[in-house]
Length: 368
Image (cartoon, rainbow, N blue to C red; front, top):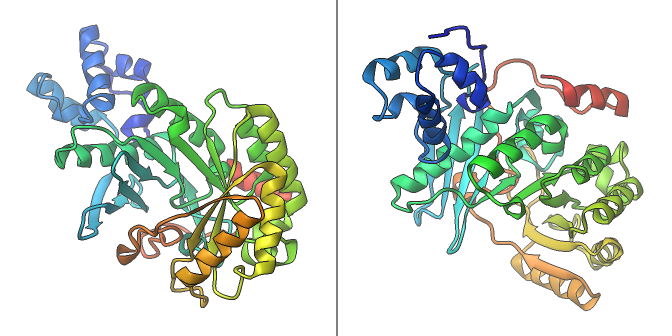
């Protein structure tokens, strides 16, 4: 047996041919058993009772260490479950499972922390520590699917949203590899993936070139540059005009509708003027608008808009010709709602923030 397998952050970073090298003294069907155990039955190699005991014990030594579930929090009705997961280097991330009547959606993290520095987001307040590997992203969905099986759902997660910790388009290569792996091996359809971004224009154009056409959600939150730059520092590098050009290019290349995410903040971005500015942008690119009251975070003083104001805002958008959905807040009582994932006390290394120059930011997106 070959014990020279390179170190990987996750067992899901190991390709099929690497398993062949690792198990070179085993029959071919053993490799298939390991692979299908991971991707079909959500079983780690050393847990496969179909393998000889000696081989299972050896796989414990040779396989990358699985992500460790440090804690699990769940709402009383079990519709939302949040995990704190420890990575191989002792960094930790958070992952959320949201259960609906007809689907089970996993909100995954793509980075430890985030460099974008959005003041109203708990992850942005914490700063950036490192990228996640593709396998570390996939393993979050594996963990959620195992939990669904344990709950008697007898199924895997059906949808994946890249809306957890981190900016997905700032970890582009790992993001795309993870999507491809889950699409191929977990049989999650392309339209069941949603990639969220604060508005990295070059990343949006790159996403349009990917063969697997996923859903794109742009965290807009403000429709004029002055307000948006104060809320999302990335807007200073890619102002709204540049962002809209990238969205138009994305639509032309993919023929897919984009959604605008709008976290409603009391007396910040919930005026009639804000609604009219948002409507103008949404109608320009045919975007669907998702509204959600801002979820509270320790580092941001402003509260979310009242539900009455959210509905008034939505009504005005509809009268202006927009397609609007008011999203329900899920998991706020366990700090699992949109913008609340932070994990402040469980990171290794020094946090980084968004560089002021586009060139410096490009360097950050490729760093490990």
